[in-house]
Length: 478
Image 1: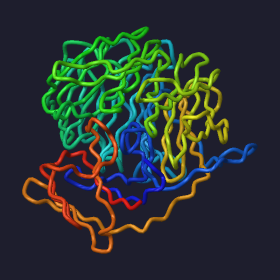
Image 2 (image 1 turned 180 degrees about the horizontal axis):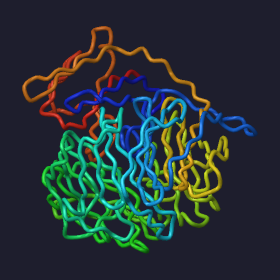
Image 3 (image 1 turned 135 degrees about the horizontal axis):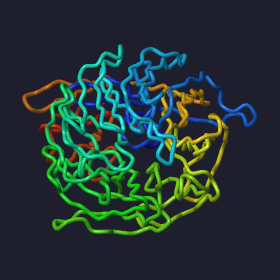
């Protein structure tokens, strides 16, 4: 998202996005792409002091990400074979509430514990254990609103490392990568809508995309990549996708009108979808990601490659061709997010690095050890200039980055329901601003002016056709 744009965001899911647009309420952030939409800029921190530590906390063993919203930080850990859902105060790190349920730690070639990040949506929090314990909480209090056990209630079999992907909320549905090709529940009461029980899941998230006009989900199963219809779970395509030790972890990435597949010790492929199925557009042996899928920035992918247990590399790849533009070797692989026009790298041993994205070469601006030496595979989260990170032992840190927010003159943008459509209005003084729409399931993700045939666009007003629940709108002025 270009930093020079002055933007106003509204998320339309039959209601306005309840979690603030400056929060990080779900896996890979508000837009699901690892990029913070907050307007502002990051600067390098002092080399000796590092970024200012606001607080530290303990949340038990695991790899669950940190969902940030409503002044809270939510995550999971495991203590003495009990999973613990913890809500921390975002300003102080003090516990607000906790909820425990029995679950084995299972340190299977790693520390063990839960791996799925919580999902905060409105006033509800959704969590998933590696064993299939799915909970819906009242986010403010921790009161359980409903729960399901996916192995018992949906007949799901578990692979070697269980379930690891964050629940995905789209409209009134909750999607989980479980079984061969996922399952869907009603987010309001947990009622099972559809499920696939004839296989095993992989460990990627469910990624929304548009499959030739059909709202779909892409995900990695045990030994294949699949696409399914959101409405009924119908299998749209599948592709054999073997990785060493069956570690199908990195999310499929919607890029360049297709999907980028990557995996542990295997060649990456960019798929495009024709009438008769997926076609490989290019292959890239240098894009062998293990855990984090990376960040797409201006037609380039910035990501870690190699073995997360050993020395790897941080690379920049051209998404039009798959060519590696540059490679920074001998670094402990980790994860990457973006904020304020910069990349934030969290190395697997707890070191934070600030990098300027540049296809011409690696541009490091600052680095600091923010977590004790240990396994830091969990991607960090960013909200209001603060970065939140954790390691496998459950040590959490909140650090204030040198962040300069950009103050925006925000025109008034309103929404109302009109029959089966939505009408968006903006004020006369902002008629020179351009309305743009973001559909996560679109083949080419990003912000676009509403296309012909998608609705009626006139100065100061846009009336949609029946709109996808996950649509966002913004006003932009260059």
